[in-house]
Image 1 (cartoon, one colour):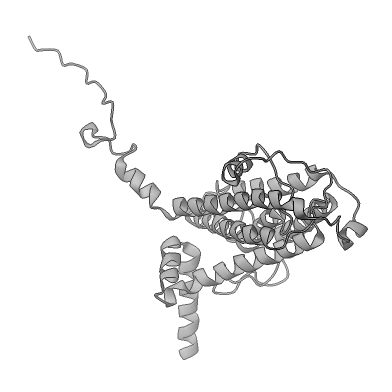
Image 2: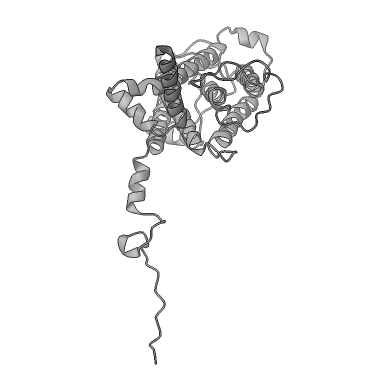
Length: 309
């Protein structure tokens, strides 16, 4: 009579070598995640946001030295007063739509480039938060929002975590507008990449205006989607100024700096392979496997060969 075969007991640590698993979590998986460009970018974003929040609290403590009232502002003169809720809805709505559109991928192709788009977005966001931390403390402006109150009273390093968790706010971080940064950065992402991973080719307004991109992928005209995005952007600007939480100058500088940071990094990631500096090597590591960069290189090579011929 054959001896019954005992049912194997699952390993408590199925991801270790003796567990024999191949598709589950392993220490190598953890190492791959921690050393991935996306994880490093998230760390950079967290660092930028945390430093910004620390400086916000420090600026709040210094704001007691400001004796000036609300400064004259042309935006306040031209726009009615809006609820701050509208500015929040515009900001967080833009962030949510951009996340859904470019990260989770609403089409079945080009999933790899979506990952690169999302990483570029949060990399620029981390840089802009770091720049904002220098801006809000360098020259402090009186907050035009007389309705704003705060309960920060502890160490800036502790209160910064409370701000990140949404448990409190500060009122002295005026120059420049964080809401403007988020809305503008989302708009730049849509402007540069919505046609790269299109949901549809339907373009009722601009479809007959000529070719959309040149051979290296540079955008040559607007699309209906991009026009709608920028209309939404300027409506968001109006809500931010009308809420009286930021001056028109805060919105102007925030939008301008966001565009500059985005375009500088976009230009650098296309040319990083031409030089071996440490920063270019870092960019190449971050952008490895990006299909749009490979397409750009192929397009340049074809144009160069045709020019030589």
